[in-house]
Image 1 (tube, one colour):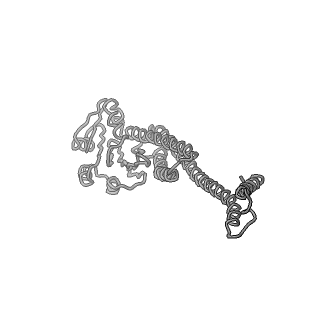
Image 2 (cartoon, one colour):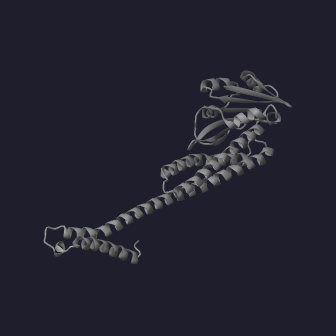
Image 3 (tube, one colour):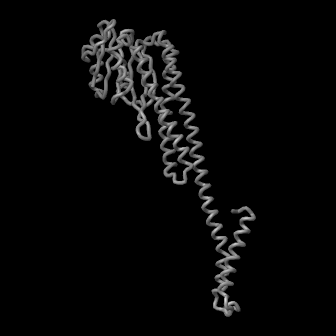
Length: 317
């Protein structure tokens, strides 16, 4: 699907893609062309009149899986990633942007909350595009970074739940859940670091497509993304600690089981010895006693009691 917008003054209207290309090349105002799930050949044919660099177009239609920014003089190529937490792992989606002084092109596979929000904003706030594509890029990056914080809340809640679950005797699959969470955080962390550096570059370098008045707003986006990076690092350390704690608790539970079985075996060993002794085929004096059986049972009970007392006195129980 291709959606295109043209803004000139205080009005922003949605236009056909061909008209947006014509206005972007020679017409007044600024245009935004959003390419969603468009075949690379169709996208390259549509954007041909802009004469973008072949490398920028190649990167745009290819999933490079790493945030970056390339300067081509009059325009920039920018790759960023949006994220959504689905079930137990993050879903990352690449958004490629070509940012000119009057033209903005976005390319992505599947709906993105950042681009959807901008589509909703434009009819009410046409100045976002009429002032230049950099303002629209700021809003897009702002929404994109904001959507990382619910993921941080989800991870924090999952870690709290795992901490409570670990101390329950009936806890199951805790190790699997910890490893799955750790793997999901690693995926987000691999994106956050380069994306943070990419946005920082927009605030420092003298890019023709990014006017000076936009840099404070982009620095604000960078600060919040740095906060997300700090949270990910903190959660990563907590998850590693949880995994170590779970291993230690499993080992302690195993030690308690072994201790219990050892105590039972220790108490039963003298009983086995006594019963084996009286179970041999010999004519013992006790066999001729009227209450010989009571004597043997008492001997067994006394042996068990003495063994238990000995273990107790040595604080082995």
